[in-house]
Image 1: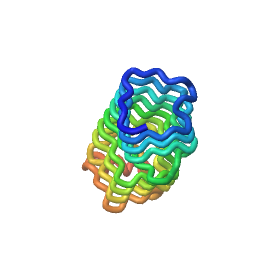
Image 2: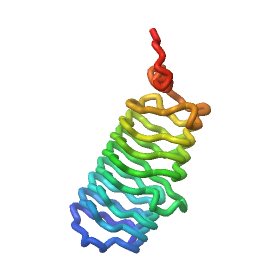
Image 3: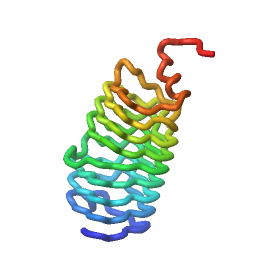
Image 4: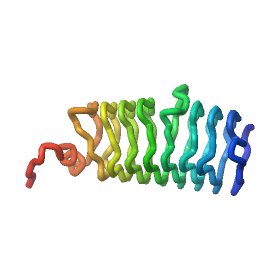
Length: 185
């Protein structure tokens, strides 16, 4: 399906499984708990949608943009790695798994990214602009040249992650030293 807009559309549980969508826009749709398995979304936009607990086994996300969406409990590790490219603006992303995903140059803007897992992820040159990263796990994560200057509430161990040339605010740089329990000031 190419260049279609779905607004306030209610899909049957398996209606989108195994389908291909190119340059489609999904607005105000509820995908909560749906099986999107085997589907491919190319250059699609999701606007003000609920994708909580969606099953994305073998799902392709190629240049997909999520804005004002809720993505709670989505296991992106089960989605296709081939050309995986996602961007998020003003989204609530909770309990989501991104482990081992290659997400170079991904953008997260004004998002609440809480209790998510980016272990073993490649986030080279990723941007976390004004994002709350409370209780989000970074372990063996490649964050080289990532822009974290306006991110907050993160806990990133510089000994367990690649932070070469990553950008941090002065406050963020101090936060990197949390584990050492230093007294600064």
